[in-house]
Image 1 (cartoon, rainbow, N blue to C red):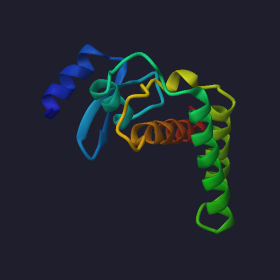
Image 2: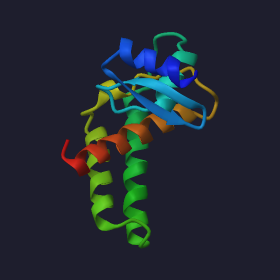
Image 3: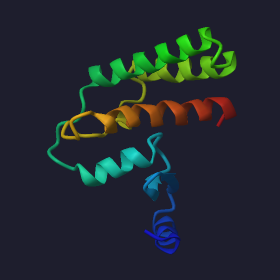
Image 4: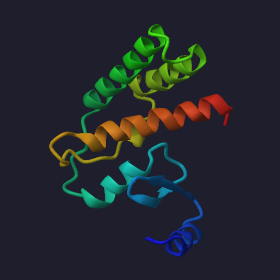
Length: 133
């Protein structure tokens, strides 16, 4: 989709933001933490109604938290960034952002979409925590 078409989407959906990934730009609802890859999955894998189980989302968030802690311990992630990522991951682990995980269970075999959904939510929430917005 070219920029002109994306601008039309943004004008017709003022509550959206434009996200970019390796496939280009896409409009994403501004009131959600997910990003481009989750939005694409919602469009291309709208199969059935069964969503990813909360336990699986929680497990992914535990892994993201552990990765932040280990990378900090190894000197690869500064303390301030580690603390923000851990805080955002803890929110997901506690079930605070359940509406941010809308993907169906029917995906590609590797579960890449769900992994990216968790990454996008934690990273966008981390950015929000860092900026205070």
